[in-house]
Amino acid sequence: MTPQRVGFIGAGHLANAMIRGFITSGYLDPGQIVISDVDDGRLREVQATLGPAIATSNRDNAERCDVLFLAAKPAQIVPIAEEIQPAIRSGQLVISVAAGTSLGRVKAALGPRPTVCRIMPNLAVSVRRSTIGLYADASLSEEALQPVYALLSQLGKVFRIHDESQMAAITALSGSAPAYYVMMAEALVSYGVAQGIPEQLVAEMILSTMEGTAAWARQAKVPLGPLWRRVVTAGGTTEAGTRYYDAEGFLDIFVEGLARSTERARELGDS
Image 1: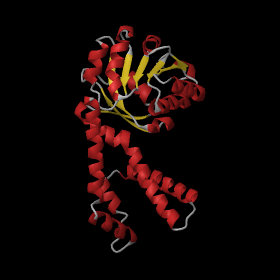
Image 2 (image 1 turned 90 degrees about the vertical axis):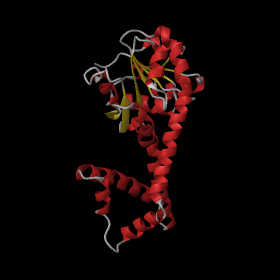
Image 3 (image 1 turned 60 degrees about the vertical axis):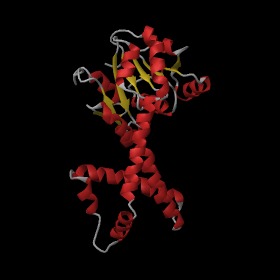
């Protein structure tokens, strides 16, 4: 069943992208979405572009909505949860979108009445192609979480994570990884432009290659290591590149970046 109203406390980039995804999916009308934020200018901008209602306060938002996304900065999540606790009612669904902040801390601040879980999506929610890590208490069965899946599946694919300690790594692998993919694409485009290929043409080619590669890898149903080696021919062009990357420690550098992203997610949860 579609919730009557969905609230967002925090109207930053990710909340904006989620709102856009819900509206373009047809699952929610703009009038079913309520937003609140300390930045009034940001609220007016989101309202002007997407059309959600603006709450007079976070507590007002909580009182008006059946589902509430806590999409503020990690350090603000627990204070916000404490602020809205008097307005929270039994059966309400509260979903934290904050990196690092544990489910236990959010639940302790909200009290026992709502159903609470935490997620880590990425900005592809705006085009309904996000990868969404979901963590909820083990006591919540798959059946009990069906309303959560029904809602979040409008924005992409939902993967339940059973060990909350893994959510920091999920932040790196899902929340942050699109930036890394696009950085690689930017490098490929820059190289193409340096070779005299028009920028728009090479950008379209690279994005098309990324899409095609993902589709090819998914249908192959084999581990990724053997799969990429299918592209490599002894003495060929691909091997020339992969040998250089291997010699320069490309994979080690990339994994270290993921490790630093993961550690930062843990630090944010402690702040």
